[in-house]
Image 1 (spheres, rainbow, N blue to C red):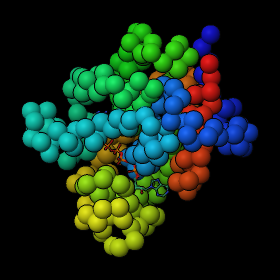
Image 2 (tube, rainbow, N blue to C red):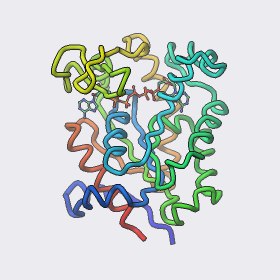
Image 3 (cartoon, rainbow, N blue to C red):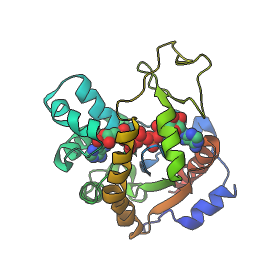
Length: 257
Ligand code: AP5
């Protein structure tokens, strides 16, 4: 029998009804696939990094993978560069192939966090097919069912978060000049690197990215919602509150036989 996470689980989790598992235990449990949905700036990357730290499963960010391809000037990177700078989406086939390749790596054995993927209905259908095909039988039947969490955030807050975002080019830590500033301005707390602003975090590109999200990525949430799989979180809350709710959801999923 398949068991899905649903809104009732989320509200139980938010009420703190299900206690956290020990953090050392969390490093060994099978979590399965976790899909973080939400508009640009919703906090997907921030929360994915916290999940990585607690559960020891990898973050698979298609945005990071694409930016790496651009930096290395690969064929894919050269094709993707202008699309990223304009706030549009890279083609489904290219992105699906990139994700397929990443999912074969052994660090995905207990699960993985998808951040920024799937982003179109075609990508969602492809991923669903992969998960149902038995390729992920290593998770056990129940855990091939992904945890799909969508973080909803007010439009003006998204703009403020994106225009204030800075990141470390060395350790990838994310900061925000308004909400999570580094101790020394424009400098990474961890390794002292000069922080950078993403090329697509300019206001005109942000507007395009948000339009693209509305037109092409909202249907992804509808796709999973029609299967009763989407848990909607209030992403406007402080980071730690969102993290606590996500950890409870993942603990519940990992605790299921
Ligand atoms: P991608 O890198 O995925 O960017 P995105 O989806 O636009 O998301 P962001 O990384 O901007 O936001 P986030 O939700 O991770 O927020 P974060 O945690 O950083 O994609 C970039 C581009 O690549 C796309 O435009 C597209 O061209 C291409 N691409 C990627 N995937 C693709 C795909 N699957 N198919 C086709 N093309 C693809 O937080 C933002 C800021 O807010 C930070 O400063 C953070 O500190 C702060 N913050 C976070 N949470 C909170 C909180 N609760 N309270 C206050 N501040 C907060």
